[in-house]
Image (cartoon, rainbow, N blue to C red; front, side, top):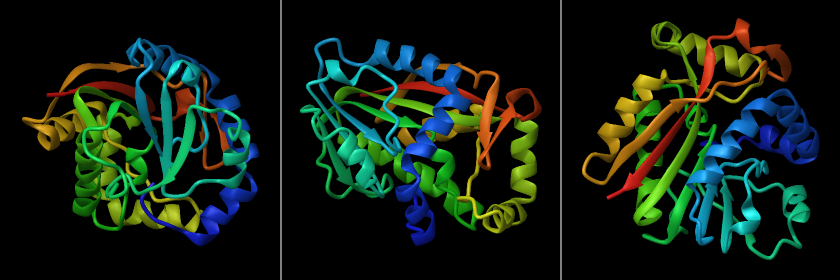
Length: 240
């Protein structure tokens, strides 16, 4: 996530277990599907992995990794306590768009689940720049031939057109509902952004729709996925 919002993070820290429980219950099918894909793309030998913006949800087999660094702009004390006795997990506070405390060419894989749509700011063009900054930072910290794994909430193309047309209004609505500002790309739109941002540095090896299952947690409510124009797209990107 991109901005530090005192009230938002205060709520998150105080209600972390409830949040994790709610979203994993509502979107259980998605988390099972994404876990299968992530596990298949993580290094067979263990490796060193960076998970950015995970919110404390580790739905894949982290025990097989040599080291897992969970990084976010805010780290819940409760999530630190939950994994304090897991020797291969560490935590770091950082911003996905400027990971100045993460060195170049360190990680065998970087995992980014449902983070990019949270990089929205009042300007549409700055929102896209934020996504580009985040993608380039992810590639920077990867070793050569390392994998960037992105599971991103995406929307139908027609809905993204509405987002662009009514961009200030939609972000204002998020603010009024006390919800983090979001902008969701269509799968093809995000694919073009990834290719443009990482041209010459990495390439997309696989892209697939993995769906969201029957339900989605939307504005704190468990809603049937079929009434929302959203899905989840999985991108596997390899550093050159």
